[in-house]
Image 1 (spheres, helix red, strand yellow):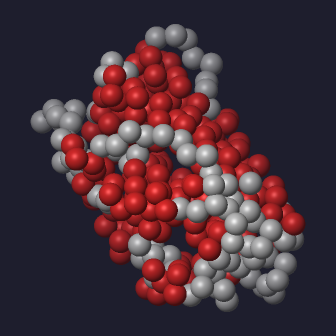
Image 2 (cartoon, one colour; image 1 turned 45 degrees about the vertical axis):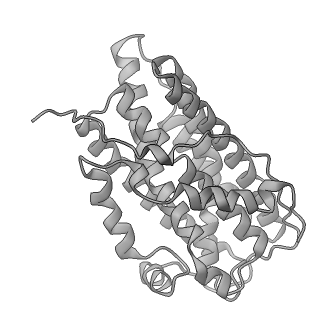
Length: 298
């Protein structure tokens, strides 16, 4: 059996022209526990603000190196649009960090570790031109495709997480998360399409998925523990797997069964991201998002 299967066919009706949106959010009225009376769910989702700025700047850096490898003009346009959106995501989440610090929770010790991961461990290496340098670029392109599978999963979840509305989640934070989630759904096929275009090796896809999944689980649980243990309003704050499972059952976090089902989905040889989520739903949210349309006021 060939190691590189034919590229799965995307859903043509799902394709839209990607553009970076100028967003505006104000954080002065957002509480530390933006989901009322639920510090664990608030902080578990807050990990996004710690991971994403460094991670998405890394995406942009790697994809700029990948542009010369792209021979399809529509894919090139998609990648350029993806780069613009990811850069805006990084900037928007970066703006939350000073607000967290003002509320008494300094994220610097954790973000320094995340920066090291993306800038040093996964950054550029001193490699000779040719095969070795191309191998490292392809590894990172494949890893981004795996990570984007989960960002699209989370984006689809946050767009449909009605329990957060029912529990009175802070509207500014919810709009930030849903704007970002909608754009993740909107551009969910780009990373996978790029990987299939420049390489497509199933072995590489499976191997880099394992690395990306392990890193995400490690970093997310570490981030949730960091927030809970350093929250100035909590005594003996803890983050446990049991809390995560319960929150998933309640609808304030993604459910554990749904996350586990996403593994064989990505590893299926017939997988294509356009098969999951709804571009129409994402575009509709973006058309009405206050933060994405210049209306940051409460």
